[in-house]
Length: 261
Image (tube, rainbow, N blue to C red; front, side):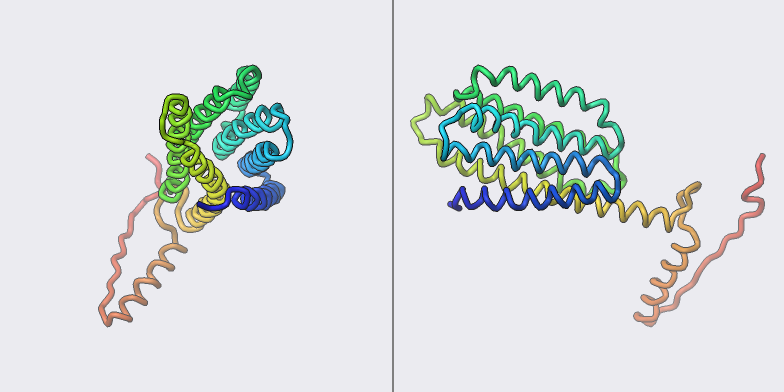
């Protein structure tokens, strides 16, 4: 199995770089979706650092309680980032803040026990399920490449539910579950980092497609404009010449197209 401390260090470095990159995109484009995802990456870095302190200091409030709150806040910030894409994050901000504050109260008496870890794991799984749903509700025309991010969320949720099941069965199980929990932890770290990498790439692809549509489609009818016709005809002409085939074009003239009734 891969060395866990090495994975944590690499993840901290990558998420720090991604967070800085997303902040630079927010400063450049002024889109809040980048700001929320920047916060999500940065909070995840804090969660890993505080959780890693368990190996060096005996201070459960920092290494367990604060770490759990940071871990819970990570997907909540990502959810706000998804809603910020279509400017609906204001309606969800109070709900996400309420979940975080309620978690702070619930975890306070149980953070040092297995119940605290079970609560955190289950809540994170629910957050990733909702994130996959929220991404689906964006109704994007080019949903194909966003399917990658949805898959990441669903797989992440499944892993967290598996971890919750292992935590529930641990007291009565005769099989050592520590190895399986370690594998899930590594998968959680890797998936979180991959998700952080995927989001800005998908945003770039979506923005490029939007610009392409604006350049090639008529905003009133949704039909191809003159620019798109010339590009498309040049492509077909080149293909016809390469295959030594004939090419024909049909022109239809519509009289009084702009005349109102």
